[in-house]
Image 1: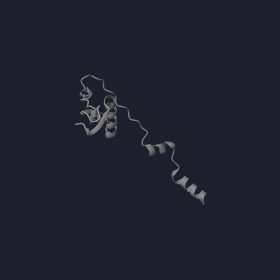
Image 2: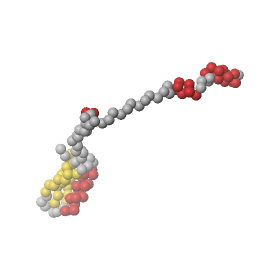
Image 3: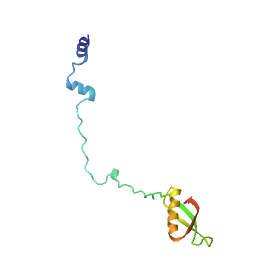
Image 4: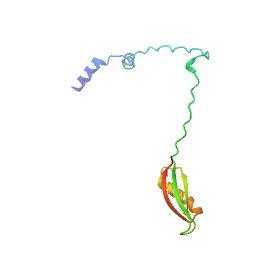
Length: 116
């Protein structure tokens, strides 16, 4: 029974040649002639020099860290600010504290705000 079905399939549509199958799958096999390139005369407007755009500055996120610093325990204090190039307020705080501790003994964080 299976063999009879295989014989029917071969009779119904498998009588095509390889070229006929290619034509059915991919269309005609006739290749079109490639258009000939025109010689460049230098006056072609489609070959304009590319328009140069102004390079946009890369956005660098900045935070401003304000610290109150001093070298005496309850003595005079001063406010200093640091500009830090990061989005993380925690990282900005740590970086500013590290820099301030090199010069000052007592460091207190006042604020961390985005630069405008």
